[in-house]
Image (cartoon, rainbow, N blue to C red):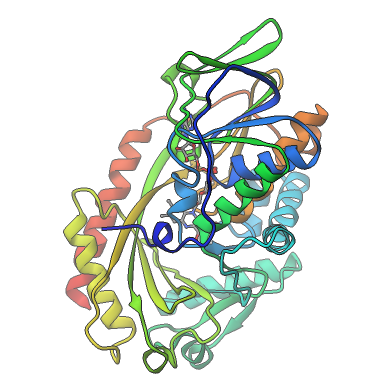
Length: 421
Ligand SMILES: Cc1cc2nc3c(=O)[nH]c(=O)nc-3n(C[C@H](O)[C@H](O)[C@H](O)COP(=O)(O)OP(=O)(O)OC[C@H]3O[C@@H](n4cnc5c(N)ncnc54)[C@H](O)[C@@H]3O)c2cc1C
């Protein structure tokens, strides 16, 4: 089955493979939000840029995600402060709190056709305990000036059209987009400003020679003063060139046909994007045409395909029992780059080279922001302007084991949940 976003993107790129050797200011490897945002910023500053994407723009997480333009990280503010310290923690909280403004202004300024809706998101309590969690989260966020509001059971029901939740936390800074179209729009605008955007151009080797970066695409070589790795969970380079080792978590989505106005009348009339407080999280939203999109942790293209598909069928009925029997016309999955502390990383692995990854499931606004910040920092040779301090390397132990554990937990959870719904 297909990825909905590929089928409905109103932005279509027209990018070729990288044909010849060339010399540019900045080489970017990876054509997702991070790489395309960096390319746009660098081109806007008048730098010459080559972006290499091994498959097609948005092939990785950027073309597979839910489309929730969230403000901030998963972690509540106090947790971020406890990891990064007061000064750096506050810098990151404030930068990512306003990152949706950056995304929505890029969309507006460049007329990116990605169905933006900015009516906020709802973090939904799936249990009484979930309400307590949200109360604590709201308190912390409000202490840091974040404009979130707790909604009670009735208010939540009115917003969602489902009686399944005990309350929710509304964040008006956030919204939803068609994520692949947004990624294509970034690349399209970067190209209009002079960036060279190449698809089917896998970087096979990277080395530093005579003070310049040499990036191979088979026999073709791109030389540049600056280099940015923007491969996140889809990094595909030789093991010795990997600048980040972290675990990956699969997330899958299922989309129905477009519902008619009668069927849709009470479901998410304001189109907020939603996710719940369960440890094995699930999400739901509607798209521009009125399709319902459900998401769950787990790989619907792997061993757990039946389990996750069964979960989706039951979940849809559980949330909206008044709907007629609906099939899912689309099903797809993607890999999330999950760091141990859920904080993104920027690795300055050599002179004039950065690698940026680990958004831990929140990469639209952070990826746009970090990509732009990395381009600015590289081109001005001032790493102090980055939102987090850089590392020399980043390697977590037992990443394969953790990835397998997450998948087994998702399969077990969705089997049990399906029985209960
Ligand atoms: C299913 C799912 C749902 C998600 N939902 C949300 C959400 O609702 N909101 C949110 O904010 N975030 C969400 N995320 C996270 C978000 O999608 C990612 O954090 C974000 O897309 C990362 O962007 P990126 O540009 O860093 O990496 P990617 O988009 O993964 O791009 C990396 C690219 O690098 C390319 N590449 C790798 N190796 C090479 C090479 N050697 N040469 C050339 N190219 C190479 C890959 O092909 C890939 O296209 C979700 C992620 C997934 C998987």
